[in-house]
Length: 547
Image 1 (cartoon, rainbow, N blue to C red):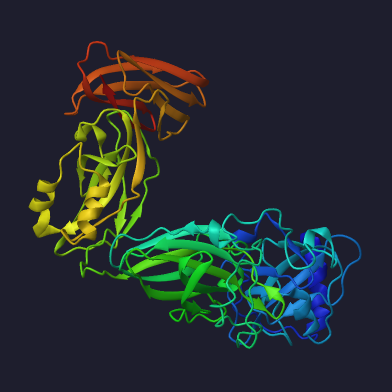
Image 2: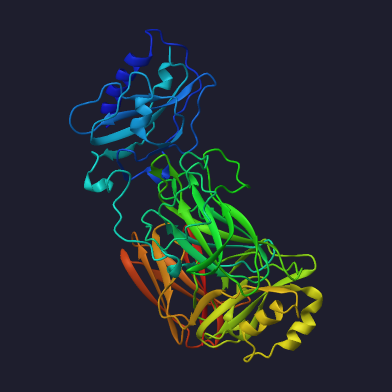
């Protein structure tokens, strides 16, 4: 591959350079964006090819960034450098080639692309002729090829569930002013038009060129939510950056039509082509703000933009942010992030829930534990976000942790209204809805399974010792320490109590490979202990619990 690109660079030099070589300037091609590595893009006539770097390139102030191409099958291609498009390009490759003097569309085949930072097209420095370390791979298909679904993208094999109003997916709503909830991602690429779409309400759509002279519906999908009197900003997003460049809908380009009522009997609330709060050139997500009415059903139709025959394709999320509360209560539990694991193993284990953007000052955040489908309140976990089931005195079972942000001076009244084991999350939500208390409750919460786990608990590795684990957890009379030793070596296995007092020490000579060492706890009373493995290079410790 490198040899082919060396030949390509010679061709590039013949096209763009004079025979003079200038003094080296600052230039670094960076490397290909991670999202584009290890994949082969499929390019169809009228479709789109994604070219992107990791953002670490250096281009001289007088220079340009150039994409160069090499055909990997069949005959080589002449004039295979595409200049001046920069380090990010997403669009119709052949159209760009046709628009560049002296270039013409590439024939079908397999290709690779690399980037080069050029300091001076007329007389580039030798040091500025090094391409990116990796390459972007793509295949060009003929028009009408099965891979092109008629030209313009991957073949659609499954229509989205929310392709019609009746199949609308319910949006997650945030729990307080300033908090946000995101739903998705959802792929709009294979959305269809079946004739049930409203004939009105999308007059603001921008087809064919952004001017809106001829609005149209393309591959729409539907979402729904119930009004509660609060005001929300609703926008399409890239799912907090989790969608890669090859997955996010083209240029983020969505359009919204928001209706109230029921499917078949809809009334327009608002139409939006581009989010007024987004000013980034080349990024066109939809976004609108709506003050909802209690008890009213809302349906959001999201449509892809058709720019002169090229329809945006890909995935997106729908984000709802509460901007104003109907009650005037400013409580907000903010944004909740689940811990890495929701499988709580034994009484010694705990998990931490992340909280950000919650209301502070006159407000307090705590976590309420519920069980069952009715969300019966069974415990108060405190405001640290650390859920320790042993401290709560809860038996093994399935539970849900809910963030609860409330006005601090109402704490006594709130506790008086709760009867543990009887009051439900719905009861608390009712007190919030009718204005009895100023609070915000994360009704969905985070589900946990709390059990007497028999699988091994992993411990960090040491030099020469890997895959350490201890089981069962909790233990009865003995624990098994399992690990993989790279060679035979002496180790020491220690048992400490909570105060750090050494209770037992045992010398052990490992064998090459898997070792299973039984540690006797029969003489120790029930409680928490620390099991340590010590080698010449260091030690690791794991907390264990004996029943």
